[in-house]
Length: 156
Image 1 (cartoon, rainbow, N blue to C red):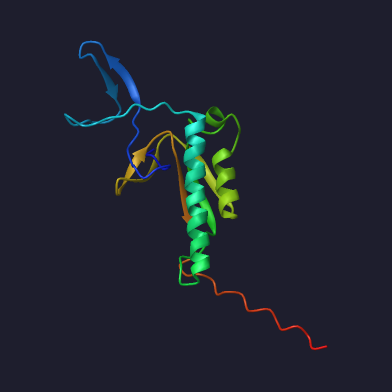
Image 2 (image 1 turned 45 degrees about the horizontal axis):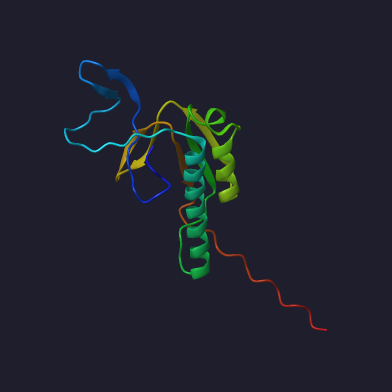
């Protein structure tokens, strides 16, 4: 996946080996000469921070839209979650962390699957990702009409 927790986006690719002859690492992607790379260690703390930041940003956008009173995108009706097999209990030391956070943050049902590679947006295009979760909001094409105002209190 790519840094959902900050403004910088990048692709994370798995190191699949070491080349003693070339004195280098073998990465599961094609690198260009001179391309900058970062080394990352996936850990629970960083993954929790990414999920919490993503969900917090969603809630802030929804709250801002509600407070502005103008037209906004309809609220989510559900969440589809595509999560890497390397996440879940193995990463978080608890089951269902990603789906629980999605449900708490959106208040809607969450359905999903564990994958061995997820497809999601990074750097302006859809990419094959790994060791990440892709949260997909499902919403109606138009927002439901607002509820009618409450009736006036009875005259006394």
